[in-house]
Image (cartoon, rainbow, N blue to C red; front, top):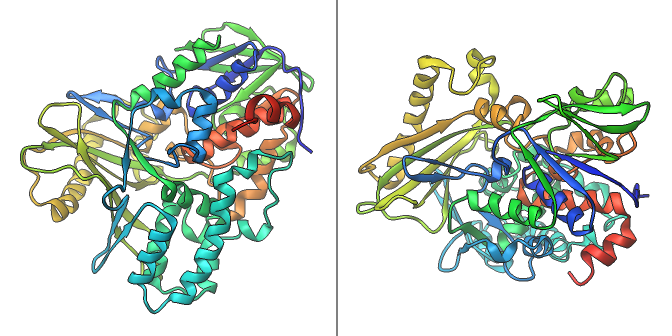
Length: 492
């Protein structure tokens, strides 16, 4: 049974990333009084990029899936009223979306389910039965996802518990070779979950979104954040920046409002937390949460952070690529412990290409600077980043040749993400949505304080698709399925 609060009254949203903004837009459209609180001076969270040396540098949005007319993310964005204002360019029109580069072979990920199956069968002629079984299950989820079944009925489309078992276990049972496991393992990296722990349903949802269609932003990545902000404010939403949430005010089991870092207090009947649940716990008074809920939230395992390098290279010598590269170094069993994502494309600076490279990085790798702040970490930190960046450059030059006119624009680590958006341990994708942790995360759907809700990736899955879907589900929970279907989703 979905929890319903048909009169949420005055609503406060903590956090202005895609989860907070999507939730705020939907509730403002419904006529509610919505105020959003953001600790940074600019809203948008990881949607927002930054400009350095004349180049726009994306942070959380490097490419997007399922944005063609009628496809899932496009339908969500149409409902939010933002799709027509975001300039996009389609990938995979005359070639791959992604190219997976291994030591001894490449695999191209194309647009389209049939093209993907064809590439698998050509690349792995000895594993036809395994591919048949894999594609059969992928098609089932593909069709359900394309219809957005999870939003069209009160309980969501029934999904078997087996659908949330680990993808790695399933592929092992199919007797997939390590090489095929490598290729099929890449989509799990897009939500920061190892294939061995990645729930099958989430895996298929992520893969399906990019096979439907893949896109890059044509303009500054910050324009995506600004489009969402503009839409929220146009609908009457109030945005407070530069003054973060400090304490959630509550009497017994009922919310009263929020105290900000400045000391200002805001009254509210409903608070929606679009930030990490562990941060919410630190804002709550005493024993507000049931002890079992508190224990689960404290024990959540997070995804790892990222180490990212951005370079400028000479566009008169090098050519941009209309697809992404994944340079992969699998283990003997096919698991992907080490890999590098590369994207080389036009920049906002004349005659310059932007080369972005990233890999997963745990915060423990940066432990000497754990208790420091961005901009105050010293030369040792900068030197450590430079040395790590050099290994990236070596990998890139093995793919592109010597990088002519190369200039380092920026490097950042999990500590940067931690300081910017308050993600514990600098996690790039928040809570790890692993098979072993799914039951623990159910407590976020039913907080023990009346009027408190979580939104975005806290509810469903990481990534812009999972985060946006999570926000829609939060609104459905607040207003009830009947009204959600009638006023939010009807005709979508």
